[in-house]
Amino acid sequence: MPLINIEVFEGRLDNETETKLIEGVTNVFVDVFGEHVRDATWVLLKETHPSRWGIAGKPNKPLT
Image (cartoon, rainbow, N blue to C red):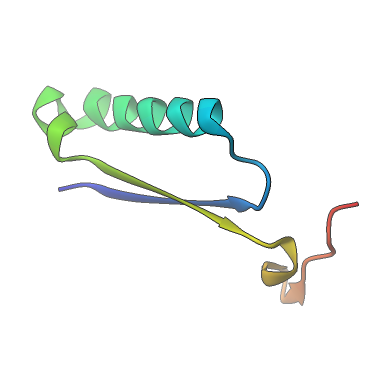
């Protein structure tokens, strides 16, 4: 069972974006592994506040 975790900054997801991400990522896995993985592919979306990310060993600067 493929389990795909996607993390994005808070506020970037809405119903349309969530649907597109889940469908699109699932389709990529089906393209690579075959149609038989579609029903077993899980996509988890998680929003995280920008201050809880780090880049190059340093905390991320909040979006303005």
